[in-house]
Length: 150
Image (cartoon, rainbow, N blue to C red; front, side, top):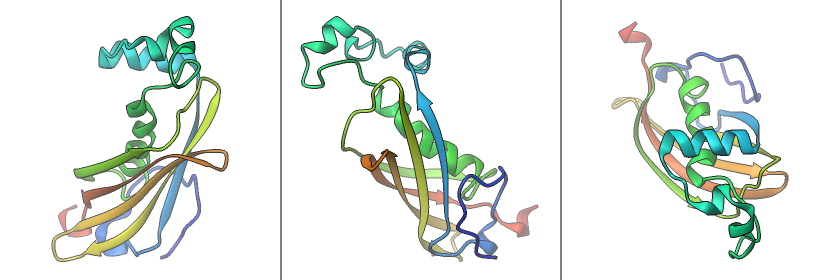
């Protein structure tokens, strides 16, 4: 069943049902609470993420979210929706294109680019946008769950 809708219920799409072009998304507004929580969890307390006065004197001209916090939205789509529960990450490339600032609503979209059914490997195109601006793009390689191993 090909369903390219966004923000569908959480779950799993097994390898046998995946098709090139399938896409899923998740959106989240990134506030200072999320940035501070990520800093605490990751132990990345770089002041460009936490100190407005410091960040004003950087190329960003203000506080920005951690790039890996933004990338975490891609992981959420892969782990919860496409392919979903039971997926194993094999690799991820990321290119950070623009900053995410406190208050920005980031939308992560993952699209099936290619499938190796025999090896259960799926290549996914990944991007995160704030409005019309692509802030992150990349590619993930995952091992998709299979109905044969229920």
